[in-house]
Structure formats: C-alpha cells, structure tokens
Image 1: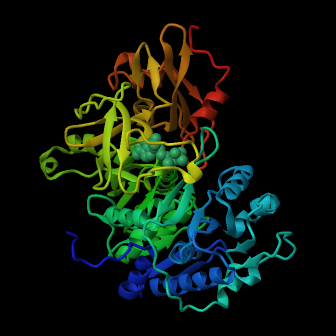
Image 2: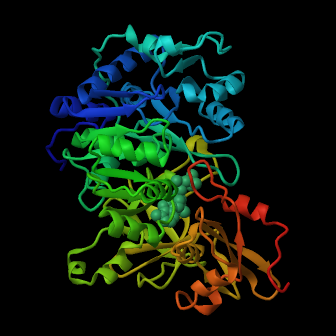
Image 3: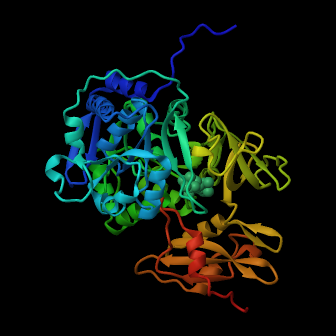
Length: 542
Ligand code: ADP
C-alpha cells in the first residue's frame, strides 16, 4: 500500500519560490568585482532568476544543457544557481584557479553551451575561448557599460543586457527530481578531472540536512558570509540552505584578503561563515596584526582540509567564535560529517570537550559510513582502528559524469580515499588521504597529526608533512614549515617541540624551512608538488 501524501518532486525552483514568498525582503549583499557594494532582496533574486530562465529559453537551450560559470561569490552567480537549474538546465561551476588548459578541457568535456564569467576572468576566457568548441554564448557578468570593446570573444554580451530584456514572469517547469541540476569537477590531482553530477533531489536533501542544528545550524536570523567559493561544490550547499531558511547572504566577490573579509563581516553583521583553513589563517593574521575583534561573528564552519587545533583554539579563546569542524568532498555534495558535542559531553571539562571538537565529527543523517581494512572487512568503531573510509547516501556520487573512471563503488559504497578512525560515539577522525599516509617500519604515521603539532608552535604559519624514502624504514616523515613573518624558530627547537606530543618514532626526522607551501586550486596543500620541490632532498644521515 502506498502512502497517501502528495507526490511533489524536490526541485531547486521550489527553494527560490519559498525564499521569495516567505523571506522576500531578506537581504543579499555583494561586494562586486567593480568594487562597490550591491544590495537587494530574495524577491529580487527570484525575479531575476526567472529572467535567466527566459533568457536561456531564448538561446534555445534544451533540458539538461550545461551552462558554465567562472565566477566569484556574488548575486549574479546566485541568480544563475536558481535560474539555470530551476529551468531544467545544468549549472556547471568551473574553478577559475585551475590551469586555463584544464578549464578548456573541462568545458569541452561537460559540453557547456553557455559560459558566464566575471570580468576578473576575461584574460582566461580570451586565452581559451577558441578551444571551447561547444560554447555558443559568452556572457560577461557585468552591465554593458563595463563591457570592454574588442575582446575578440565572438558575440560576447553583458549579463545585464542578456537578461535585461527578458520577462521576470516564468513558470518553472516540473520534472523528475532525479534530473541533473549542477555539476562540479574534482580537482583531479591524479589524471583528468572527473565530474560529480548533482540532482535536484540530492541537492534539496543536502540543503535540508546542512541546515540542521547539529550540522551547519542555519536559520532566518543568520547573516552568512560564505568564503567557500560558489565554484567549488556549490559553496558547500550554502546558497540552497540559505534559500530554504531565508537567512541573509553576504558575498565577498573577488576581495578575499583578510582585511576585506573582516570589514564586510563587521559592516553586514555577519554571524556565520564557512571556509577552508588557509583562508582563516589570513583572516586571523589580519585580526592579530591590527588588534581587532569580531563584534557579530558567532560561528564558522572550517573544512576542506584538517582544521589545525591551534586555529580552533584561536577562534574560541581569542575571539569567542565557535568552530564547527566539517569533513566532506566533491563527491558528497559535499557534507559528510560535522563536529558538535552530544548532550553527555556537556559535563566534560573544556579540555575533554576540545579533544572531541578537534575530530572531523559525526555522520549527518543521510550519510552512512564505515571503515575497512586492506581485506575489505569492516573495522571496529573504537577510535583506534584505522582504515579506508567508505560512504553511501542519497547525496553521495553513484557514478561520475560520462562514466569516467568506471564504476567507483565497492559493493554499493563509495571509497573516499581517506583513512580514518571512528569512535564508539560515531566521531570520525581523518588521519590522512590514503596517498599521503606515511608508512614507517610497517606502521602508519598521520601527516595531519604531525602538521597539527607543528602548527601549534607560535612561530609556525603553515606546515606540511610528507614521507621521504628511507632504506630501513621505507619512509620517514619530514615537515616543511613556513614561518610567521618576523618570527624565528630553529630546526632543533621545532623537533624538540614534538617531544611528549606524539610517539617518539612519529617525530619528524627533519624540518625544511620554505617560503611557501604550494596550494592547489581549492586552497589545499599540494603535496605532490611539494614532493617534486623536495626531490633532491636527503634525510639527515643518509
Ligand atoms: P578534491 O577535488 O581535491 O578531491 P574535495 O574538496 O572534494 O577536493 O576534497 C575532499 C577531500 O578533502 C577529502 O577526501 C579529504 O581528504 C579532505 N578533507 C576535507 N575536509 C577535511 C577535514 N575536515 N579534515 C581532513 N581532511 C579533509
């Protein structure tokens, strides 16, 4: 017997309809590429998203055609989020930090028909447009006055001219909720990038889950500044959860430096933010150097790579900001875990609570997870056994776009490529990406743990731990360190700093001081590149 409730597909257009109807006067504030501040409301987003729908119809784009964006976090990008997916097309957010050749490759692979780009990225488009064979329409996200003449890009028009003439009346189509809504390519640190293809259903369910109190805890009373880019895994789903809750959104545009982000947070009463650790490093540096405090910021989600304990402590103790450590990946839309305490933990001491909060957190309802050993057998959830982390759920990838890379699943589970422990309360701790694990004398050393200890030293700005070949032990860890400006620390002092903080055999054999650690397109440490830079390095005594 079937239930007798209404059968209504979960569509992204419902989210923007809801935001308009119930939070129509809610504010959306953007720092534009032009430098000024733009403000309007959810009702405006909705009206202009419908104009996007009409404008795409006028280009004769059919259902599931791909529309690419190469854009910062801003209001026009938000309109494309709803207008493209809502009208049945697929939003393809492209990461502008990728190499231009890779952007061209991705655009061709996705068979994008339209490319909408911020003017910042005009040089990239100018360099690659002739190689993007499927793109028929080039749209610059600006008004006509800001569109330079003679760009050489065929038929280039401004976004405002493109949607300006279109009606804001549009009946969103209804279709199968499993239809594709947006896509995002993984960074492709090995081989060509592969795309996760999200659906209306997966996106809506993820938006619900992300807003839960023990997840991102997003409400109508929040003012959220997503530092995490809308070109990477849909800004962790924040635009969708924002429409679902009607919170205020504040977009930083191209100004991603600590000063600009801080000033925007203060000016717009931002209560909530989200981003990768490297961005927060910059922000904290700015605050410290200028003796500033936050007057409204209450919480920030930090994920994408391990959040160093020293950063959690700085936010908590120095600025009174709660850090929510999160783990996920492109293939998971992206949220998998988020770290908040359970009721029973409230009686623990602050130190004991902190030990829990440093972990990546508990599974969100909707994501099932397990760890397995080399034989594929499930390992106990005792907080000690570590193994490959596998996940499944309605917002986890089943297959990559165009079947790239074959069947990724193992008996229905998606292998994340991460190595983790899970404790009896379900808290996951990521010890490493499987390719970054250091194998020393048959034992594993967590590079994340070594980095966390190094980062706790007051003179260390950033630390990356990699394994180096050793004839006896296979590999031994060394740590590459960037010092804070004006701070000094010697190799020996730093090695001594590890004493008592980890097992003796896990202490790195050496410290290499570097000017910068190479970062990838999503702001994560690029260990492959670091290993290349250290190719002539020899461990002490060898
Ligand atoms: P990529 O495209 O590089 O795979 P993702 O953003 O999808 O980029 O990265 C996902 C990976 O990032 C995870 O598999 C994990 O290795 C790492 N990661 C994400 N969040 C955390 C975290 N909180 N702690 C440790 N590693 C993390």
